[in-house]
Length: 484
Ligand code: GLN
Image 1 (cartoon, rainbow, N blue to C red):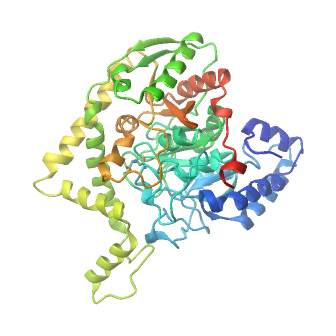
Image 2 (cartoon, rainbow, N blue to C red):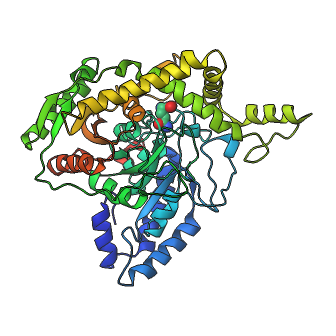
Image 3 (spheres, rainbow, N blue to C red):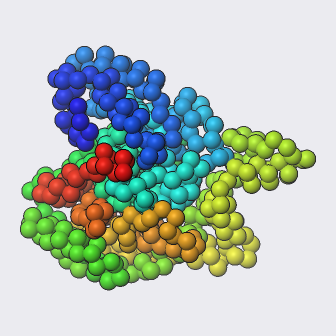
């Protein structure tokens, strides 16, 4: 058995009994046991129940109608609630929290037969772009252990990149699936806001949060998406929309090229995306320059809005109902205060404080309301561009994976990592991050962005590109990186 096998091959191997689901799960568990100490991409590995589920998958595989992901391993980001297995959000606040139910995404993938290996590391409460804010320690990039994997779904991206799982779930509020996918050389999709249920996904910024798939290829991302998506009566923002269907591969797209976004981009990264652009042209797609106005204000608006929402969402961690409670306090107020001081890390506290500030009387109009207006303008800019083009090609990250602890100048420098992903989030659009080259032995990704609910087209574009290129088929050599 070897890692990095795609879903379709795994499915046919399992059906042909080349190996059993138990053997497959054991293979990945062994790989995790071997390399997780160095990479730290899993917070919790659930060996026993994983093997039980794999055995159940084998029983189903023996029948004639096994579900689509039957026996295929998956890793869930540790903000999806899992009944019986702890869900920590990489926070001391929830270090030993066990949810009483499964998130819809967890339930649906498990109903589809996927076998959960465990829960992946992340930035605390999904706030960050480097995985450095996790209370379980940083995740290391499988391509170079001195570097970050990106964040906040850094454990998810690293686990796929390291061949410890073929499929992973992540969440993306401002870039948390796309940026780590780019930095780790894997493929990840942020779906349209509303496509995937948020029920049981621990909230950061509810108007932006969206769960999505990460895998080795766009086709595998599609396989997982079709089992995650769909209306859920338990999430009032989930859309009632039909399953994502791929377009025919003879379909040609008009692909927008937002020239101004590439102006300030690192020359080597821009060069990789430029080669990809030419490949799209060679495939018969048409490239057209588009303008995306107001993008410059997106990062600032995002941090006002997402922190405001975080400040209200995280008010529930008061020591009474969930997770950590301080051991010594003199009265109720003191208990709240000590619990939150002890439970939250620095970045989470910063967001709660700035978010509360921008929502307070006297500042609401100046910050929150203004940010909402910018959000609308950014969205309108995209919708205007989509009158002319089917998809937009853009960078994902301004840099390759940076060194651990190298961002020292303060939070703004970290926030600017999401320059290219945040506008898409504000607009609620779907975007695929897929590998398109290497700079100094580190992977680079690009984004294919589409109009609302156009995942079928976005993924078709991605699959067409991956049919012609092999960037997504290159993998880090863990034998070397993890032993040197
Ligand atoms: N890095 C961004 C932030 O810290 C995005 C995080 C995310 O998408 N969850 O808010």
